[in-house]
Picture (spheres, rainbow, N blue to C red):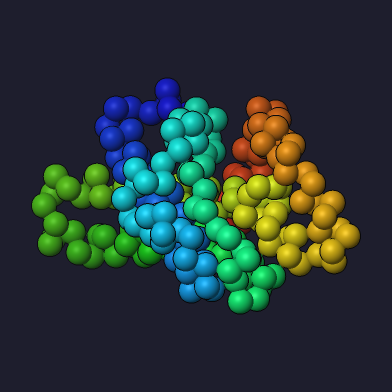
Length: 205
């Protein structure tokens, strides 16, 4: 993916990607703090500094194979007031923040022509490209993270929604989760699924 982009596109894409990851991880930590767990706050992860959340391998992966990840925000569910409810809320917070960012970016792209007279002409194209990349990256992160394969956010929602016996079975997949995701990525199945879900999502805008 990276090699198909121009230098100008990469310069625009990098801050958009870092912001999307930062919003995702900050939201996990912030909602966890609202639910009673201050672990992320105590470890300095409730910040919009992207370097705090950056996972170098995950950052490289999104450019090379089309998906990526950040350094997970630490969460201690023992501090939650209601374990299942709060775990679901924390898991949904990251993808939800990405969807909200995507929506704001879409609205920004829609109103850009009407406010173009207020923006220097040389800035219009970079802003437009940044908003387009924001829509794409944030939708990608939201969809990817909601796939119910451990340790992705979707698996946590699934585990907390299942009866105890079935939940333990899904949780036991976590040791294989990364390899399952890699197989799906390199066989093209993951990319096709994300692309399909993006088309569905964009059709609702």
